[in-house]
Amino acid sequence: MNITVIGAGYVGLVAACCLADSGNRVVCVEADDDKLALLGQGKAPIREEGIDQMLDRCLQKGSLSFQQRIPRPVASELAVVAVGTPSLPDGATDLSSIHQVVRGLRDSTDGKLTLLMKSTVPPGTGLRLMRRYLDGTDISYVSNPEFLREGQAVKDWYHPSRIVIGTNDAEAGDMVSGLYEGIDAPKLVTSITSAETIKYAANAFLATKISFINEIANLCEAVGARVDDVSRGIGLDPRIGPDFLNAGLGYGGSCFPKDTRALNLSALSNGYDFRLLKSTIEVNGKQAIMAVRKMNSLLNGLDGRDIALLGLSFKPDTDDIRESPALNIASLLCEHDVKLRVYDPVAMANARQLLPEEVIMAPDLYTATEGAQGVILATEWSEFFKADWARIRKSMSAPCVILDGRNALSQEKIEALGFRYAGTGR
Ligand code: NAD
Image 1 (cartoon, rainbow, N blue to C red):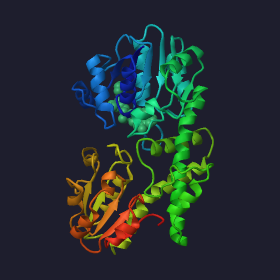
Image 2 (image 1 turned 90 degrees about the vertical axis):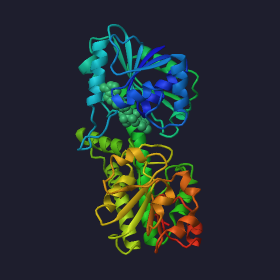
Image 3 (image 1 turned 45 degrees about the horizontal axis):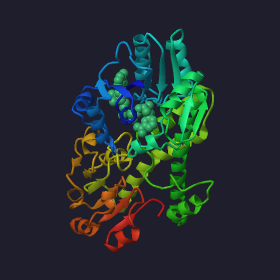
Image 4 (image 1 turned 60 degrees about the vertical axis):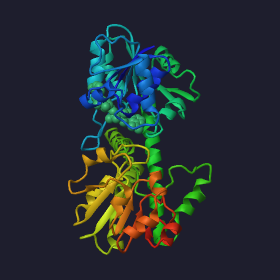
């Protein structure tokens, strides 16, 4: 099939490479000059396991090419929209790129086209886009929300938990279904608005699970229980399940924060007050503040202290720093007279642009922690588990505090080395 993919970010580039690698001819449209220049040199602008090799293979084969604007005419049967839908300052979804792209596709298409919406758009958006731009055209609209996880996006493309196809056009639905031929996953065909709602409901549910366990962790600290045991104890119940029950600094990233805010506003604008979701968002916002308060109390005040922050990406195995709790912590610490050194295995360049100027970017873990009185572990990179903590302990200054924001280290081992350890709900 000839396919146009619009947007070469985490979702679009993975889709473009996987589709081109599976025998399709793909033109990927990317508006950003810098990303386009990198792609032109065969370099992926994102860090994702397996993507560089796939990109290289598809470019060699000639099954994938990049350009800055939607081709005129769009010489493909299918257009996959994967542009960003970030938050506006009030939490609503910025759909400006979506409108621009749907308008652009309409204006560049003479014949038949199926528009597949992979970007996450609030419930009701698809129907509104169809009414506004596609009435009277031969363009069919299909909502096909993406559930990939950054860090394992390529694997998730080939082994998704489910494929959701929202459409009111059976022929277009069949075409999208054919796109995933050979992929073994349950397929769910729904209305467009239900498909859009499934995406938000999934993210809202997972975010709520995280906020729930964080509330339980805070309760554990109050009553003297250990959240690790509580998580395991409830997660063994198959109705609950063990995933997303790690207490810590809360969720971040490009999806959960913006999607929970957007769903909350979408509910309100449709006359529904989604109180549970509001609490999920509120609880999540508190976790970074509580971590800084905890460090303040462990160090007997933050002013004049030397602190290391380990991990900047919102989760391990990605360079994505969007809405990472680590960045909130850095900003909160910088409100005090703190000497702050940070280190992340891959997200340093991305983070530099968003961190306060006074933050020192350390070249490695050992330089970041040398002389520090306190360390905050904000992202559970495997490099940190394998670190020589005895060496770190020797190079730090009293009182050698470790605030394990992800409950990722062994408290017993860390305490045995002479650190003062604090986790969440431990
Ligand atoms: P991203 O910001 O990494 O990538 C979007 C890309 O689109 C950018 O490179 C941007 O330059 C490009 N772009 C914007 N407007 C354009 C235009 N008019 N023409 C061509 N290119 C344009 O975003 P992402 O993380 O890939 O997310 C894309 C969508 O998928 C969002 O709606 C997001 O919510 C959703 N989503 C993301 C993930 C994830 O884990 N990142 C998972 C599921 C769904």
